[in-house]
Length: 74
Image (cartoon, rainbow, N blue to C red; front, side, top):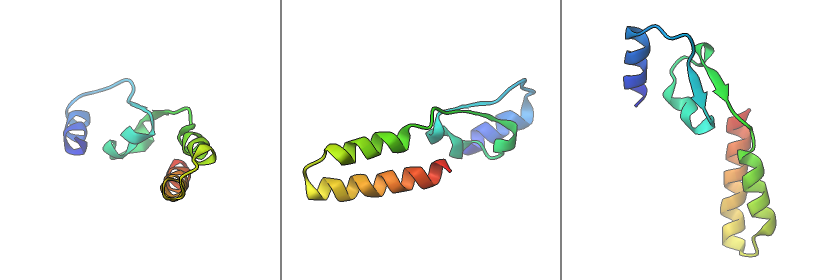
């Protein structure tokens, strides 16, 4: 996907490149040319799931995902 997007950007002229949500960002090689449309709530979603989980194994996974998403969003 990243290669196809890069090829398309190289071939075509765009008024805007919108990267819709954080998970799509790795597919845009040069984010300086893109607008990241992001509500920045992914880490909060993981945090809330963590707060409501009673299973210790689930809590470990949820904590890990929350930490990764918070770091990635920065």
